[in-house]
Image 1: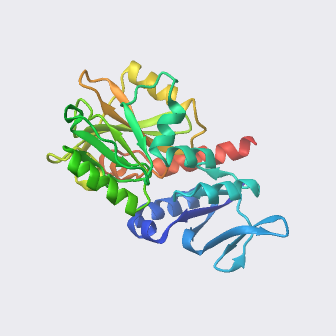
Image 2: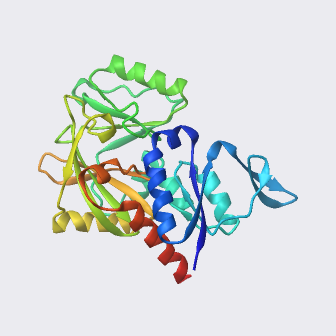
Image 3: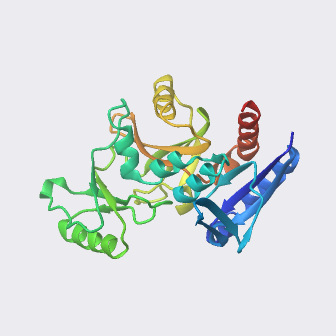
Length: 291
């Protein structure tokens, strides 16, 4: 059985991820998937005479058997699903995990440790914090790759930061710093199976340990307790491929940081021999054949 797939990227992300796109093309050919790479900027969605429509570069196209969406766009994902096309990751995953505040809100009360967090809308005045509340970590709700993540040490800077988010129309969160700043853990998950865990360590004084920002990375073995925490998170979603990111408290225990819907694979291919894309495509085709 062969399948037709759309792999959707934005143009800037496609340029940054040429190697990953090549992996998808090579691995798709191995398993008989006819893969087309589409750019989000050329996709137009809407309705006409009460029916959902989708065009690519101004033309109607035959819908694929499934879509791998590598851009954060829950509206597009939902449109495709309503037109009968399975999308990985699905629209619910995209909607919740694409926003840090929504992620914390959805997972609250589910026995998942998370940092104490305040949700702040872009138009709100910044909270006035007591001096002992600083330093505090600020993050845009929909930021990726460490974008605008900052350790704020005084009220004046928080006020300026809030002004920057207001100008950019970006909601944000405020969190107490983790017990081990500059260290975090990414667990790559396909479906509900943890594939690999990678410990990331900041290259300097930066609290951000992102690999794309120069942080170091190495394999990490999850303990039984840590694996159980991952399982509690994955039980709440129908994941395709995601990265579940954790911070470390001062006692070494893990706290959920965020979930990356459009997760990068550079660490996996740099430090392991795991064929992440191949395993992902095998998972998708198995799911489709089971339907």
